[in-house]
Amino acid sequence: MAKTKTKPKFKTMAKLQPRTTKTSAKKSAPARRAKPKAKPKAKARPKQTFNVSHFRAEDFRADGLRTYAQYRDLGMSKATNGLLQAHVIRMVPPCDPKVVSKRHYHDVDVQMIYVLKGWMKGEYDGQVVTMREGTAWLQPPKIKHTVFDYSDDCELLEIILPAEFDTVELE
Image (cartoon, rainbow, N blue to C red; front, side, top):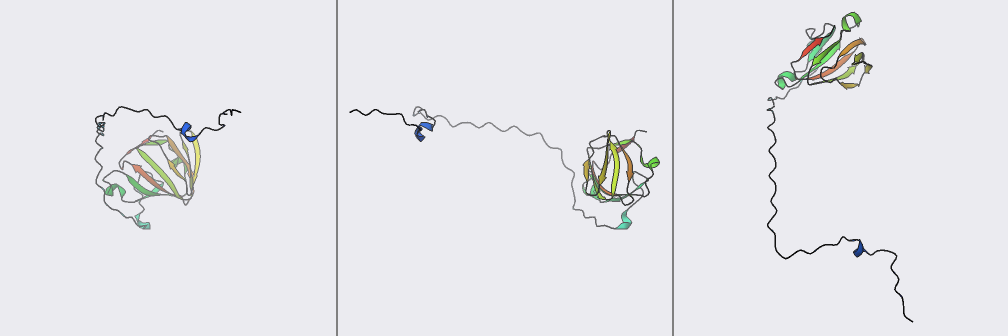
């Protein structure tokens, strides 16, 4: 009796492999690599120097941007040749909304604030937020904002690029 061949139920590995096509034995010229496009020249970075600023209570000064705050400059502006400014802001108690709550913005490239102690309540382009110890936030360039209130022990770390910038009061 003749046996009939049945098709296997599973494909073999050979059947799963993609088929290759043979090419002529001629060797082709080596492929030429495209030359990488020249990157635009980056702006020269200002020279930076190593800088350390240890805490000293007497370094807080009342000659900063706001009368209701004392500022401790961390020396980063000088160390970065004006690339950035970093300072600790100690809010002066008690908070007086008549003095504090002036709508304004800062003409900066970057402004980042971190709450070291206490809390601060403010409004940022219509959003009212209370920032507490451990909170960090980024204020986009020229965001309109108003400080509403802060705790008696409020201290903030603020980092701003560039070091020199304008503040525009809107009221």
